[in-house]
Image (cartoon, rainbow over all chains, first blue to last red):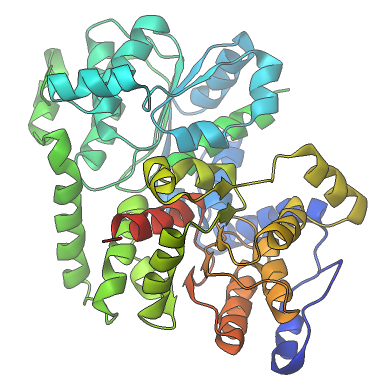
Length: 231
Length: 231
């Protein structure tokens, strides 16, 4: 550690374990470890263009399970179409404040993308309570009415993803890209399987983490990986 | 799904997979699945008071690895002391906007806890660049000067956790609780091992996720688990 080492008494020996890495080198060092470990685990058979997205998800989670579960559709088109949509300035709709907080503000400003999460708005809560549905469902309905062609980054609520699929089937939503990475135990696996089927039938590009795992940081990380790769 | 089922054409069969769960029942259903699965995986041998924290971390991540890696110290004191500190209105310092975004605002308001993340402030960035250290290091130094007895919830940067440990050794920081859950590949494992040693020597209560895994949602989830359990 530059600017003050670990010292004093009995715990001196721990200093030896902490590596000296300059702040600007930490990310590259991490990415090198990730690449090495992915190789050791047998590598992945995905198009080159998808690789930085996968690596960034692993960087965010330290979880190599995503080598198996992160799915892109249609193959190498999701990343390209997602970047094109961002460059066009489409809005990014998300179902958690945390995912919104994690998305790159300088990038969004550069391309004029609004980052919208309406989960905490009182009228969303009120309508959800009245109708007996989740706030995520109501906020997705509102978002689809306002910006049917947005990028939807669902990092928490499977009900949001299921509702979005229904609105695609009904012809009301035409997402530029769906990032389907809700996390949890109730209808999470099912919501992603539904996404894959609906996306295939209606030709919607998506990036999804199959299975139970996912979460807000994964949603924002995928958005950021798309931003950072824009030429 | 209440308020509109999955329908239409070839994807009708998927409807069968989506379970009908009322919004207010989703969390309880999730927690029941988690308890069942933990049992199936052999259970954990931790004090009862720590169990809701662990379950909530698994609820947030869908990752049962935390059964092995989540460590509490000194045993059943970390949760109790953390709750007492929250009730006293101590500030919560965190190293990511995402973790700050994920912490319960109604709870923090109730007990007058400030939630502080200074990572995005221009003067922090400037000082970090000038000194060649991470912004996390600078923001922890500032925080310790202002509120040495805060709860520190580190969900991203091992450099923040290492700096915090150094400031404890130097007698400058006296955290009410450390939540040590940075994530990643460079000095992450080492920072947590350092935390365990320093906490033992200086008698600081901590909750940490050993190993590489961690992250902002885990930091905020642990804070929320402490809030929700306050009687």
